[in-house]
Image 1 (cartoon, rainbow, N blue to C red):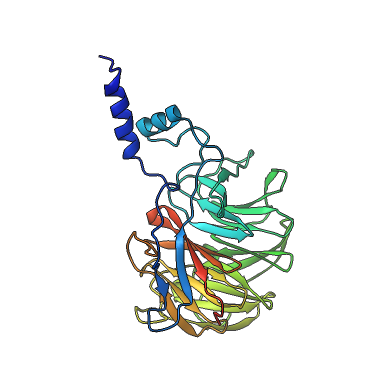
Image 2 (tube, rainbow, N blue to C red):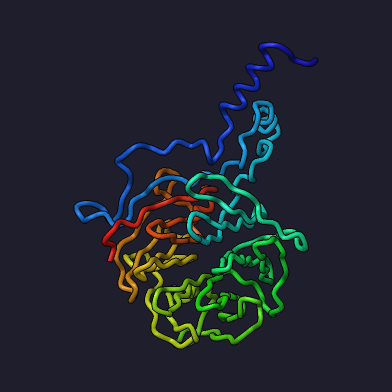
Length: 334
């Protein structure tokens, strides 16, 4: 029997009231979490969740239909399933979501978002993203990296990779962390392979499943050497500068390091999916403090993955909470 009248309206309102959406979650008023803990001066302060709402607001009926079917209302970007890879350029965040599977462009100021498609290659499990100064975007998906021009042309780069999971652009080059190869592959921005560095091991010049990579100011790279439980610092030519970190649950130790990002002073932020924190080090690798803890509240994390810095903002892909979190790097952060 078809329901009509007030009964249907009540059902629709009930469905809407129970439908969670990333853009609608309220951000609590101050005080907001900050790290390190008092009485130390705050150096990182939680600002909120990055909204991912549609480019246009859906109609009332589209919202009802979305609530009934469990899909996003008309015109909306997909709900984040497992945000993993992040890159930031100005007000824009690029997000790789392997469970979407999708790649999104999100304006973190307004919260509007849109999909980034690859017409010649439907996304399978995109896991890392990067952008160069000309606006070209790079996506690691499966055993390949794809280059998307500002005009939307998408092509696979002609280089042999196994399962790239980390991308970084520096000095007109694309650096690719390829964990099964235990190497970093260096490409021109057009995709031509220039050289590789690394081999399996735990000594100097060696990696054990490198998963992430970030460029620091001054021409250095930081590589997440995941199963050696350390961060390796190298020059842009791949020459060894040193490493820091070890396995453990004490300050500055790693359980499951995932992503890495650098701010304008060269400080390094490393996500640890085992301990659900972001560990902060100075540019030389000296431990400073840990931010976050396990949970789903403000500044709390579940399986933090990709990190990105834009100006004085740090963004974290809070993968198992299916959201992006935003933090302010407090002025004077050394």
